Image 1 (cartoon, chains in turn purple, red):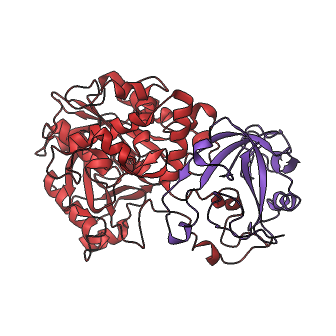
Image 2 (cartoon, chains in turn brown, cyan; image 1 turned 90 degrees about the vertical axis):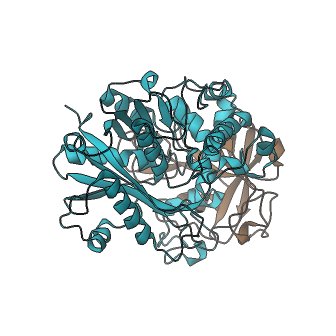
Image 3 (cartoon, rainbow over the protein chains, first blue to last red; image 1 turned 90 degrees about the horizontal axis):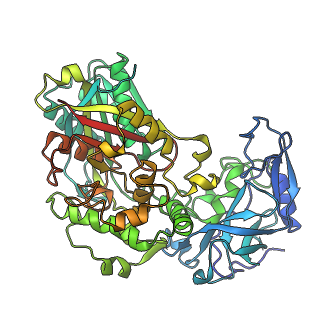
Length: 147
Length: 407
């Protein structure tokens, strides 16, 4: 299940091996094991929010439900990290952190990474699809690439 | 009834300026106290007069320890604004509020930096080596000492302030057609200002060619878009305007201050959920309105703008948020030469700013504001009566303060 250390071109340095999840966030990570992207939605007013914070800023209630998303989206913004901030990151630059508007979850954005694409080819507004990085038995991270 | 014009900055004090890490073996506390004593001396006040500590970002110096080490007889107020360099301009606003409320009489605001490897201000927040040290939790047993929400943001590798602001800058370029040439104009204009000041850290000319030849750190930002790192401390003393008029310097009145932001912009630094209309902004539009209203002035009245410049694109976004140009038009605005000292419509960072003068998160902007209104600045704006100082766009509270020359 676990993919090789550098499984995707321009993936970021590995920072997490576990999602450090609690009951609030675990459904998201459970779904990632099936390569299913989800997003938390307020059970009361229906507003999406990311990360899955404890309160809905629109109606001030707490309960959420996870909704399956199609796994497509649009690039909202990105950067290209070229300078490694620690020796560990040197093998991974350049990498491309990205803010993504995921289809099906209006008002909530994913902070993730663009992979398998050259930095010069990345453009805000481009259509994306999710790809999966199986880091460990408990952590599968969504990345994004050109749709 | 507001605190408008009821308190004034009466003293400024600065330690020697050091390159990163070069202040050792001095301690941060050594430098914090040295700057405070110099500021009190400049104000013709004494440690016995000092009774308030109005800090930001933790300073980072503990008021209690300072009071003990300096022998302050009575501490009547001590607090720090939350967040980081965003509070620089607001710290004197807080001092003015505290003095106006009768809580304290003489407040010091300061910042001290010592950029040694173990404690760099603005350094990376989630070094790869730190995560394996997570204690407890994991495998759905909760987060332990790691927030469960962190797994939704931290793995992307956005691990320094520069990364965060690059994300905003990239969106600004997309949304409004802003170009790297516009970032360069901020850097070059400020370098030109710094080169006229012997105390400024950056003295070599900076050309557009130099700018484009520099290595990229995090696209769209290159080396020159990032502030430098330095060591040193700067302090300012605030007291009531009534008392200030008996002191040697022309009082620099605190005319208006804004310390806050909007909730939906509170994640400016971190998870990028801001609404489309304010994503590529400095998060200061609310603060600007509140500050101008209190001071009963507008951007057209400001003679010199001292805008916190940790990253050059944030100067552009502040020009918009503080209403010097319409939203989205800061690029062409600077390209037309508007921020240049001597020729521009609104001279910006006449001291060179964090980028080229000295990085003491926002304190140099306050000092330059005071010097401009005292009439003692090296790059003196002729007849300057009103200065705007801002804190660094980051988390809430973002701050801005209008300083006014006493009549």
